[in-house]
Length: 264
Image 1 (cartoon, rainbow, N blue to C red):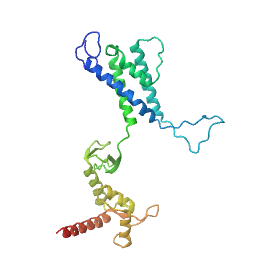
Image 2: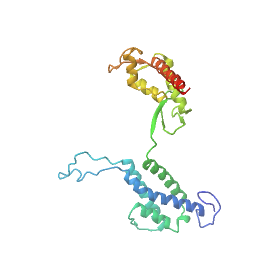
Image 3: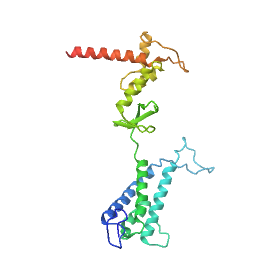
Image 4: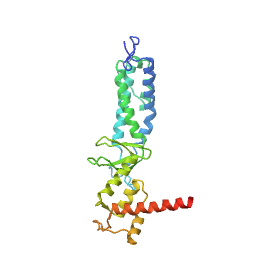
């Protein structure tokens, strides 16, 4: 007979080899440690009294229950209790004090390495662990880095602060973050006719690696170094990205020459 998980030969009365039995046990114990953070992820405040006339009126509305987390808790609870009852070979509805109690009793059972459906529950618990980790682990903070360099795609891309490369979810091309930043600005500037408000220009340049503030662009316009070509629906002045780029790069070049002269 072969192990259900790794398919290595084992004794006939077993369904899992010792290595897989240990791995399965550790998986169940990890799930037991995840239950409290999972419950905390509900992030809810139950309204006292429900809709009864005597209910307490709170100064602020309660935070709604995250239903997807509640469903996940129910699935974990029912699966753990079901496996525990199978392992204990109980015909009655065995009562468990908590999800942790059911999971720990699964690991304590001598029948776990002999259970006929061990691999089925292993796969189920593995899927649950992945979903739980996605729920209790805060996603890594992301930022806008530009648009996909593929002109047939051109969707806005976001990436974590530590990312070096990014794969476009539409065209599946992989780019470096630096390529995405520089290409987005290059397209805006090369078009010649692309325009934006001072805030939009400053955001595009800053994202692309050229630090530029909205008030700086406005000062250029006040000093007539930059000419507005119209206004948007909110009556904000519009400027060509190409014109802003010309002034910004010229200013950067002057600062660089000045710093080099001071260093010399």
